[in-house]
Length: 82
Picture (cartoon, helix red, strand yellow):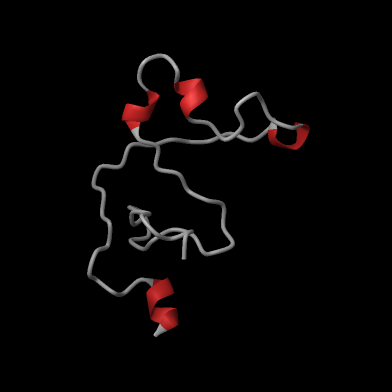
């Protein structure tokens, strides 16, 4: 359950992203990144990556509308549980 808790719905698909085996999505708090010490307060790997991760990149996009899908009960994950 921890992979899909507190994850907003996708603007493209309209459903909550990921499954239990997917890569963990992060929702960083901007207040934790102020003060010039963001490299110490947030990061996947603090002091660099191993060789297999050096060619990966992350695309960060601002969402126009954050939909938490509260109370709808029609997620694919929730429907599979029923």
